[in-house]
Length: 319
Length: 319
Image (cartoon, rainbow over the protein chains, first blue to last red):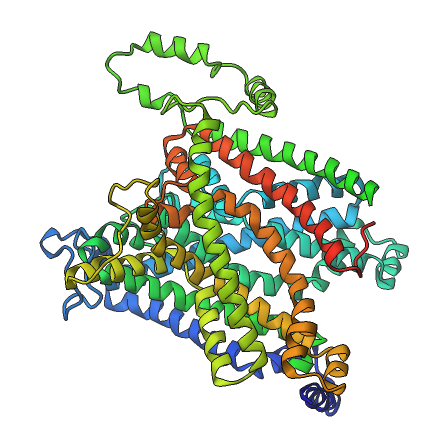
């Protein structure tokens, strides 16, 4: 019974899509995404979070996030310190705002690395096949076989040997931020590489690729203007879900003390000290950064799920 | 079948070689294993140089790698720089405790996840299903240390303050050979692991049961008048369990590596914590030993899972 209603629903959806003027692929994707309420909720959540992080900077200057005030250390949430203070008296609210910026920036840049490396390795392996494919895929498999947190730590220790302070736009960041981005990006591209490889392998057999070849298109032209655009849907979805993974990885690495180094705040390293002070009942140090992490990851995951359905042309049945 | 197996094994050995090269370079170069002697007043600079030379730390990197590999294939993983013990002994000491923790957690997770997944699928879109789905989405977006610290705060710190029977935080000294102590110390870490992993598994169980319930043979079973119970347990569940076998099979090797973060937070003396403690010290023989064992397990369990799958699902043929 339930399968029957869903089929008739599917036919109705198909009719809705076929009537009226022809829609571009982008409009089709947006139409399917819009009907996905959870995904839309996720998108709204992300927007609210971004607004909070950006508007929050107007209310609290960066100095407040990093300034030590030992007299006010470990104070619970109050009118002065909305989210309490940490073990050196730094204001929790300001650190959540600025830490959120760092966590999101780390996540986004790490995903850019992940996408570039994954697409390149997966695409090259599939396109050239033969021994290039064999070597690249064994390398991918090797990286996948090392448990991810172990790999993050080993690479983090390797790249984190000498950390310098970097200056960007007059703000100084601990160089650890750059290292964390590299570490997360370089340890997360493997699934994407496999997906891109499988997709390119099937696309390669399509007629329009042979047509492009017979017209004398170069390898790089076929790769970048035919193969990559056709895998773009998959890449966008992976990037979205990858962002959630990258933010979570940042939290794990920083929690272990290998990530973003204080005084620069990140949601992960705010929790490092929470670990030692939770025994004294400093619940606010644990609850607020965690809530922001969970909210962000949840919103991104919901949005990613919706996008996966939206980009899949066969999925109108589930709408 | 046999040619398939032979090809997979050759690939696996190749993958393992790449893993060892990668891990050796990263761990050997990430820190100076002699750094701990730098502050030792009884050791002169000349002594240290002599020790370095004797341990072969000055040899070219490829020489060091092949010496390590040659020993490792004979089961000799070298000695820790810090504890002076053979790495194999150290791992053998930690492995049982990790397995006790992880296997208990895995069994509890499977029980809870199957129960929740079945309820969710059978009562699709009911209030209970929505509740379970919401919880699994949130759990899926949570870093495990959030749960771990929360459990400590509530059941160890707050309960103690209230004068209620409380759980140990893990920071105390206890004897793992005493079964009562072991069980008491296991409650919180196992709960943390179960909550996080269940979120992941139950979503999977739900969707695979729902997929099977839409199949023709389930409709046939219902049409010939079988009870809903027989349809569910005799027809649907068996087939829905198939993809689940893969998921669990692929997770088994990770049980060996332990749960790095959980073990650290609860001070559980397992493999994950061994790895983390010695990674911080730059003690590369220990770190490499753990990495080698866990990654080999991952590589070989992948092959075993593939083979087992052909037995449980006759539709799949290896080629």
